[in-house]
Image (cartoon, rainbow, N blue to C red; front, top):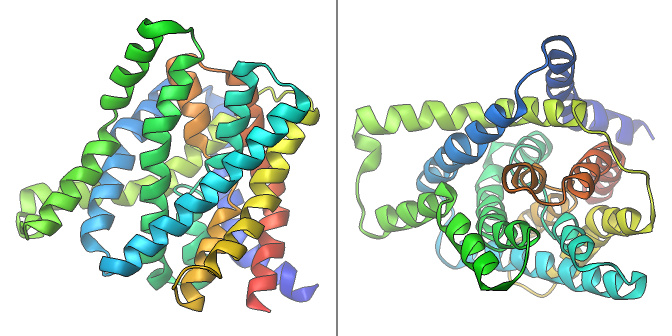
Length: 309
């Protein structure tokens, strides 16, 4: 019990304090959530991905297996979500929201500080590739789904594809890959690299503050079966699936621990941000972020305790 409490105070409590500050600030000053959303989606996340991909020493086959493990876990969660949707006979719109809430974990503003505090800065190299996997997924498949909720037919598909291609995170990943492949010395160009580093360094704190504002402005839906099943898949099913998947891929035990703990992160704020930005199912998306973030403080602590043991 003392170990669990120690892990909570050292790993989870700092995240709560920063997000709580955002909650308090919003209660006092009524912050403009849309502005915070745009700064996250269109500036800080792309800068963070680009800088971390160029800085991280992990690469080659190991990076490929890390991304394969993260993607396989997400895909397996999608299968569980599909089964739940069929059993519960959910409407199409609710089923899509259920899938996003179940599949996409908060690998950035929750996962990065969580993994760093839990396993040290060197583990951040692994988490960067988990973050890239999640961001590619959420800014392609996620944006597509968020837009399709507004209607059907070819026009909705075209709007979804257009919105997807407008996401700068996709181009941040592509640019980083090209720079690495062609050995372009971006880091040596100070007037480009320094602003990118400064912006990337702002992400963790700013995103946690945004999370606090998001939670402050959320009026969560009641805990009913569709939402409960999404939370179970996200917080309990995902780490168990990641544990099984890491037994099948050739990654070191330390890397496997990062993948398992990262899999149990709460529903990504980006799913709620996309719903806010593109007019998706805001109620389900924000409720899944709200409840999963609160409950993850317990489930993540227990998962970490088991991994440490």
